[in-house]
Image 1 (cartoon, rainbow, N blue to C red):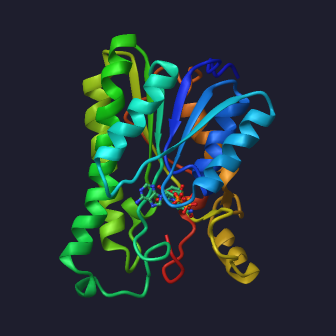
Image 2: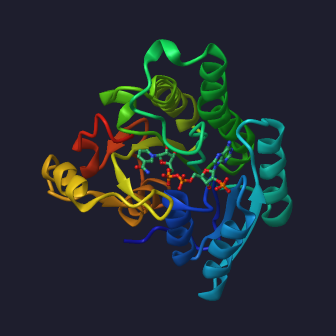
Length: 262
Ligand SMILES: NC(=O)c1ccc[n+]([C@@H]2O[C@H](COP(=O)([O-])OP(=O)(O)OC[C@H]3O[C@@H](n4cnc5c(N)ncnc54)[C@H](OP(=O)(O)O)[C@@H]3O)[C@@H](O)[C@H]2O)c1
């Protein structure tokens, strides 16, 4: 498959760990110049960047905080200054809230409105801000690929993470509208909605739970970060010729984990 990514500039947000890190590596292997963002863990982002450079790629780690919107434009400006523009955006960074994925045991009415605003502000408006920052350059070059990372929770729901799932579902509407608006400028916009994904950032999941979740999927296995990265890579590359405005689910998205997490 020719991804036509050689020397393209790719921005993967939230790439210090997990799906973002795997995605950054995947783009690096295709010869793209990869800018990757972190929030609290520059050392982890630098390690991902070093790994890309160790195999002959180019990488740049930049700080970006979804809860501090000006840092989004600043991060994009840093990449543009270094490499002249952003050809591909993977909006992957996430504000989980608390110490990790939303607590599936929490009751809807116990989530404060401040938390609603913070979650929507970071995970929906933060994604819109990423798109706004890269669009003018993509339009002027007549080419762009945008992949928004959502979650199976956006459409399937799960007890507990109301604000998280709501913010993610907003990305689906964003992509569908933007696909129409930006398509004439050569920009394709899609959403990847992973299910329960095994990542380096997730606390160890007991094998009994992995097996139970996997049994509920068509492929009898859960995705790992590399599975999702390959999907993102296709959508956000020259190999994707005309697929836009789609919500793409992976095999894991059928795994139902009502009391475990997103
Ligand atoms: N893992 C899953 O099972 C799963 C399932 C469905 C959807 N997803 C989606 O897939 C994406 C990646 O998930 P993941 O599990 O791979 O995540 P992860 O490993 O927890 O990584 C999250 C990334 O986001 C960054 N980040 C955290 N808070 C941030 C903030 N406020 N502003 C900017 N960046 C911030 C982190 O940076 P630092 O570490 O440097 O702070 C890190 O790079 C997310 O959009 C998530 O919603 C994941």
